[in-house]
Amino acid sequence: METTYTTLIDCPPETLWTWIEEPDKQKQWMKGLLENVDTSDGPTRVGSTFRMTIQEGRRVAEYDGEIINYDPYRRLGVRFWGATLQGVEMTADYRLQNLGTRTRLDYTATADTSNASFFMRLMMPLFKLFSAAQLRGFMKTLKHLAEAEAAQTTVEA
Image (cartoon, rainbow, N blue to C red; front, side, top):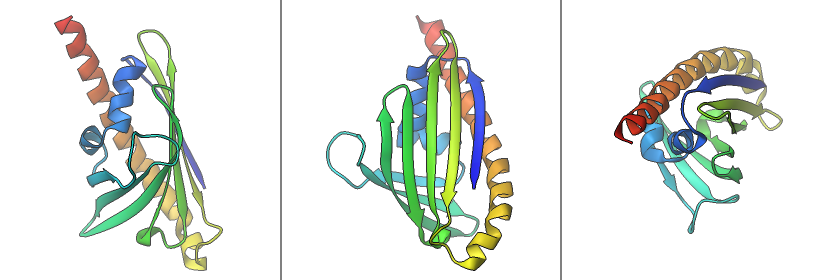
């Protein structure tokens, strides 16, 4: 299963990058994200690990993850898994392209269901439909927040 999303955001890649990478800023646009903490030492790099805690309806779920691509201001790729996904491994890839006063964001999410139960594989089309709607909301909020920060920075300069 793959979901893609592309948008243009009126801010430099450096501004958008902080919204994608920093946990405190992630909480502002990823509805339900309660916590995202590093579980490995050192600076963020390929191989760094993290744990996300997400409110999913009435329950709280934890997901472990790993950075699989890390090129500041250009690309961030993560892989994550957890009990809710029941054998499904998810990847999320954020690619930023500097267009001068704007940044193009290309987002791709994939789900590897090769280790999932028959029931989970059967549920994936429904999951994709739900996640696509949720993604549009997340990206709309991300765009609004990054553009507001860029506008404020321009006013202050």
